[in-house]
Length: 149
Ligand code: FES
Image (cartoon, rainbow, N blue to C red; front, side):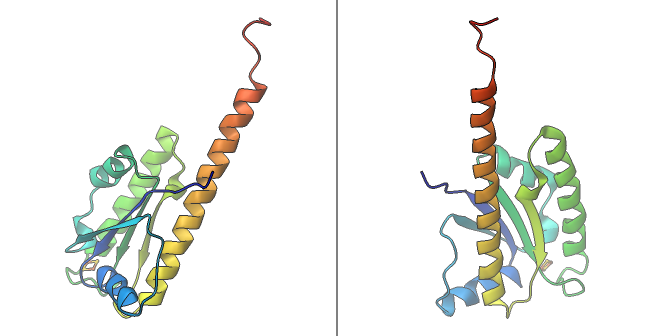
């Protein structure tokens, strides 16, 4: 059975969302399992929002903002970067692989890069999900039978 990860992409309006839009204009396709959420700036992202996305069933979350030094709200992307790092630590504490959350910076003119990043995260999350499923199966197989005890 093919694994279809649900991925939420929080994109800032000025760069990442414009890059996603450009990718569409260029007729470049990215995986349909990625849901783009447009924000005025990645500085709008807070830790609760990131964790809530996982709690609501997302398998992976990405935050995509302007390149460093290009945020239209000056430091929004740098604040988001710190929050993503903090949220990754919380994920690790709860037992979720922090690799499921990622942030990258992109310029509005980089439609193809946006597509590439979407594909990369989809592949990575798919791999993580397959590993988790295999690990769970191994644990079930290797679990000592309750009758034997
Ligand atoms: Fe793009 Fe702030 S406006 S990250």
